[in-house]
Image 1 (tube, helix red, strand yellow):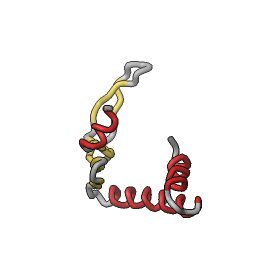
Image 2 (spheres, one colour):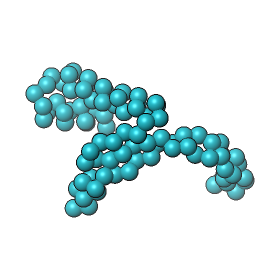
Image 3 (spheres, one colour):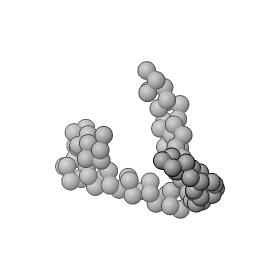
Image 4 (cartoon, helix red, strand yellow):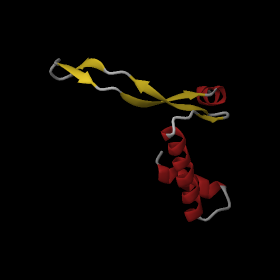
Length: 91
């Protein structure tokens, strides 16, 4: 599913023009980005929790050559699904 598919679904299910549905989806995505950029957790009830975690530097291997390579430290986004989402997907 793409962002355009989400926009179409919002457009079909709500009484909005397609442009408005696109603006709603775009604003939601921007809101999620802003919260994660600031380092806050984002909890969406019934869906899950997004949070930014630090990843330590480590030594890895190039899968083609087997050569050791340094993997730099950085940040990553972690998502933990909530119980209602897990239950819905499991059925």
